[in-house]
Image: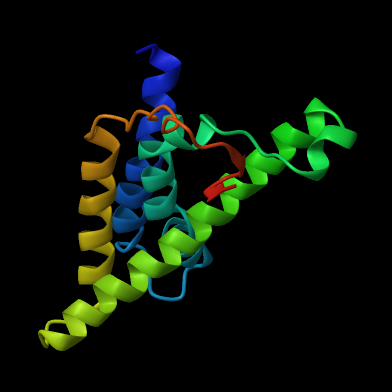
Length: 146
């Protein structure tokens, strides 16, 4: 692993720990709100997408891409990973908040702490490898077989 890979891998947990540190700022501070909002919107999902990165890159975008060129395919895959990170983050926030509400231990600080710990754990996990396509099947798009 190169130092650049390590820095990219540790950005989401760093954002979570930064958001936790921002809780020490006064309640109405825009910096506090921005740090927490950015982490909750993208941090946990970015760590999970990074965990699945090699498997996601195994199958590039197909479809109308062939007529537009390689640059369109790269942007399409990047947009897919960004949107997946945002939706996974929102799902993780909702799941953690629901669990904490169900156990009668809900607080915003606890949600942030649990998500930061989960993001840190996901950043330290080994990356998932892609598996070769099954014999006898041909895929046309991600996840769909003929």
